[in-house]
Image (cartoon, rainbow, N blue to C red; front, side, top):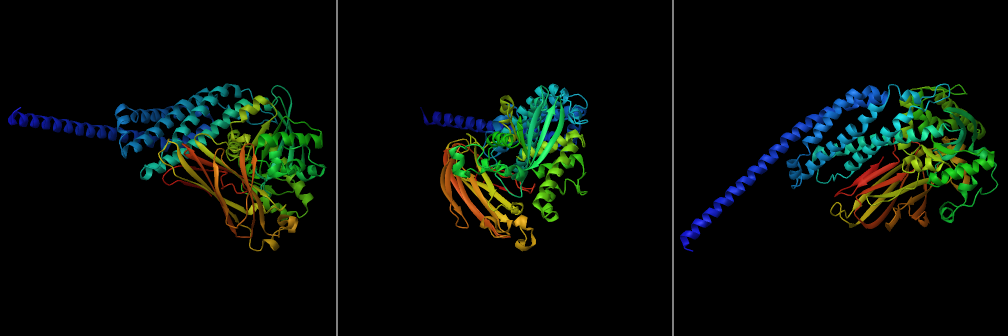
Length: 604
């Protein structure tokens, strides 16, 4: 080949390369322009969703059937936003560096919103009849459960779609997201989480309530009102018990008793506890009625409570329900204020402080305190049974309590318990799976006092060694628990002796004394455990989990902290810690963190 021919061929190849590169750049500009235009259009639809959703939520919770037209209009926006962010060109650009993760996040949010609303909530609303939720409110002590049958299937489907949508949002990697987009994804996850929890609770209710309310024959239930001022793992001591009977939708409050009175009838362990339970808690859960929720597994505590109650009273129950004064405050928000037998008024704002603190100043005698607790709890339940308040308000109150792990339920019927097992109401030990590592962080009062009212836990999780999302790597997960006493500086003198326990069990008055238990994620190896106070840890096994136990004594205003580091080789990117619910409703019992370049979530 001559030099001239070679030169001509080289110039030809060069021109082709330039044309090809130019064409590629034009395609890139076109693709980015296409994506940009569709992104702007999708943003318009998302803005409509953002502005109209709050009003529709209120409408839906009041009467789903009346929200259908609005939900249909809103679902048109979610479908349009999803269509605009899921075409082939969008999908191609979504695999490019930097801008790709932004587009993937937007696409996930729009598709999840479409699934939640158009495939989940809208069919549920369309299937309901006008006033269907009002049928769930007691009228003269009776609930008509027949309307639940029509809601069972659509409620189950809505809950499944909500769970799918939430799972997709949770798996969005926030690390590469810029500015407000990351915040928007976080906000979306919070909204989707609340929606999924409410729909799951509704689905479970449609399946459980007919049987529990005696549709097929009379039932009886033991209700434990926990006292968070004296902590136990799942909340607080079982301070008051109520016996409810149901028959053909009718609900009757049979009687109330104090945990103190019931414990007085126990002469020894009512049953032999498994060795692993005794290794952590001794025989106390089987020797004291107040300790029924000391083991942080209500599928264990429920049967134990039934057996203990039967031995003490002769009454055999079909299930056990546990709530706390914070849940009662939620119910009071629905029912409105109630005048108590002593002439005082209890409402949503003062219920928790009245039950967990003020009562000890008002009534120094423990016997009078017990009578007050029993009569007050009965008054609130009577208001509920009489149908005070809106049905949606009552359902919302119970759903919120269940989501915060303050409403726990165990059924003696295997089919009903199987429905509960996947929900937060089951109160089971945290389970670690391929996606999420879960700690259990539980507290038990160690002084026989009511000083737990002043405990303020601050729990956080942080990952390290995250590597590439979705690929196995050796990762460490750090749990930090800061425990602070908010008791007044002069607590030893200013608080009632019954609150400080006056030196019972060798603990000086005014001190918050706790025994803490940390359940490590299954399959994770302990790297280190340290306490700022220098306290030591003991280790035991319970239900296949390693349990670290430690003690802490907090002076008023003092803060102590512990740090636990675990390690594993896994692709898991999520972590959760399930924490004992406190007297403070602003402190969530669940904290979560994702494995990112910087990943810390704090429970405050």
